[in-house]
Image 1 (tube, rainbow, N blue to C red):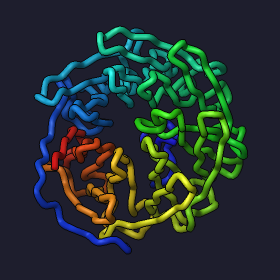
Image 2 (image 1 turned 180 degrees about the vertical axis):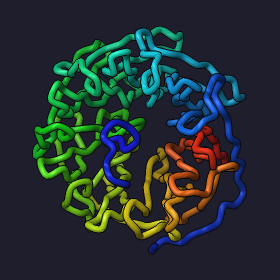
Image 3 (image 1 turned 120 degrees about the horizontal axis):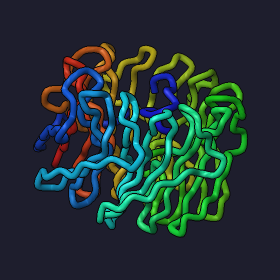
Image 4 (image 1 turned 90 degrees about the vertical axis):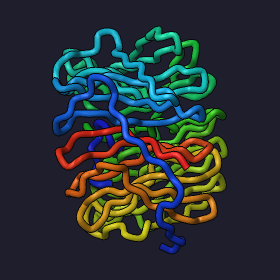
Length: 367
């Protein structure tokens, strides 16, 4: 389930730690991005060619999608019928190898609709079966795999979430995880960006009737396996959340314990779960370790929130080594800092930083 979007869930070592060594971090701003608090550029992912993508929020508070090539050239876009008022617009979350990008837009009435934009710039918009049409309802498209299958979830007229898969021929499969709640703010969601792998495996989380999160993985044949990270709390806003999976089926994620502290975990395809905390992560409510991305090689990137509630980047190598880093210009106040989201196979990392004024800037870290 995507902690950065609609569901607003509560804040979400035994390993060796190294300081950032040879690396290069550049920050960037999409053309038209605003410079005030809550405005700016939010990079969401990166592919093997170092094309970064995401969305930016302009000076009027409206969101627009972007693609940034390896040489720094931008293409910006807005979905047809995307709203033009503050809080509306176009959000981009996942890019396939052929250059198709998927996400959702919020229309002038506050409803969400999925879209896929081809590498030629052609838009196809869609709504999942049963998606509501009112403000805060509708379809979130969050993942696209090499076959062109799209995954995400929708909110119905009662505010309940339901997961779906959209085939390249536009056919839909909807599903609910066993145990998912049926009240507003509950139901079944998916991870974003890398939640759907080339084999068709999908991961996400569901919220039960007690508003507790639980992880799941759905096999290509539709079999759903739920799981809990050791130490996950069982109260409202606590539990287990997932952040995606790689082609091998390895899943990174977070769990929120009974004290509302956040911890990282890695689940291997055989179901084994290892937990970890980045040294320097805070131990207060809403603080801790927040994995976000996982590449083909099994390296994990994300952020850790320190005792002052400032976020810093980390990279957990496949051999257990941890490298910490901060993007240039990242703020040092509570809620500010560096927020890595995805890493590619060669180890390049993208995400965004929040500066001292509360504005967002994209960054690219290359090894």
